[in-house]
Image 1 (tube, rainbow, N blue to C red):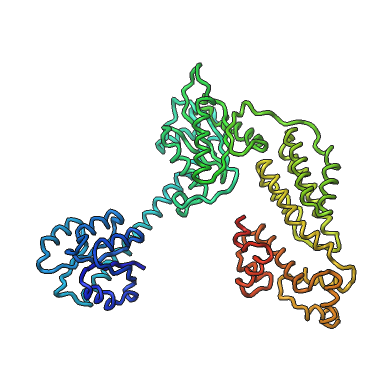
Image 2: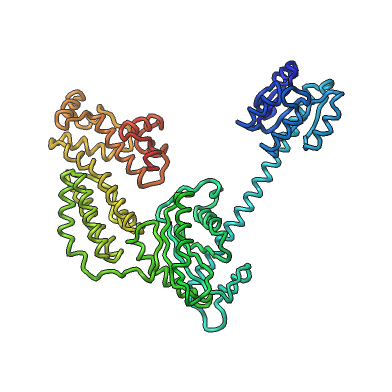
Length: 536
């Protein structure tokens, strides 16, 4: 809805316009009614209106000055002048300020004003529509450009034929990218964390397209740099480089790439690790070097400190030592601390064993398999403890760990894994050995998606509800309704953390008709709202 500001030192005129125009029927709202230009400008600075209807001759600041100031604030503002017969000279000046219409006070009526405002609203609607279409065209063009560059990189990585230049070089030339006669230094850049980019870069574009736009903007002072996206969090920079005996390519370009990483972190919150390849690659051999760099850096970055800039040639290899010789000790210590509910000890052990692995530099895939085996062993022990049921399978664990790219990410993920499961251990330990209580708890687990009442469970057990309530409290130390809520909230945490299901849908799946009530319970249970918990 567009807003309209009224400005006139004649109070009856302000009152007439304020009260006689059916604002909502016209799809408009009254921004403010001001007695002179100075007051109007003060309000407009805080919140610029879409249209202004103003008198010309006013004290403190006349209409001409006001229009000029408003045009500075909002160039596309619609301006209508209210003039008297003797204001014609002023009106001519106003025309030069690109006012959209004028109306004589002597002949002004409701019908004329409504017709004028409707026309201006239609003009604004049309401009907004055109602007949206242009934004969409620009977005499509940008996405097409980055899709082409991604395709170009993938073609570059294919083995070259035996005749002439590789096909990707000719394709680049057809798109205005001239590479012949140049040498390039490739740099692999990897974003270590998913980030939420500012709207100025996002604008409904895929995250990678938006990130690439930001990178290109930061590197615009370096002519000839190519930014080629590989996948969602990884891209290749190709830096034009003139080979000389005096210059070291890494030393020459390292400050530039370090500054890029700093700016990406400061402006976008994107922590980026960069690894330099070998310098002096002609276009014909560039694909081979980029392929080698991607293969090497893909595993090397596992142990690198996030946000650093590295030279691939200086990175160490991996040990051939058998990691599984530590398995029995590590698994036993971690399992015991977990079953003893010792969160502090668990953190110490995770940091100790991951630190040992980091210092030895075991191959990343071996580290992931070793970690997966330990965690699945613990998950299996949870399942056998008093009939605890879980849908968290080996496949889910394998997928989650497989998507981790660095040791830092792995440590964070493992600690979160234990924090989420320690409450389940406490829940299991609180379970009674009496068959009625075990049956009730299993009923809750199986029917977590339904509304569960004390009375229906007591009926299922064929006992009096009051007796069941006292028995449950005596055996578990907790009342039954609180136990049901606890189980539902723990399930909600798992769904929020492991799926993209909406909060409203999760509430329904846990038997809550009212999303607000579910949110209130969740916040009471966790200290945060479902949305905050998912975003943490």
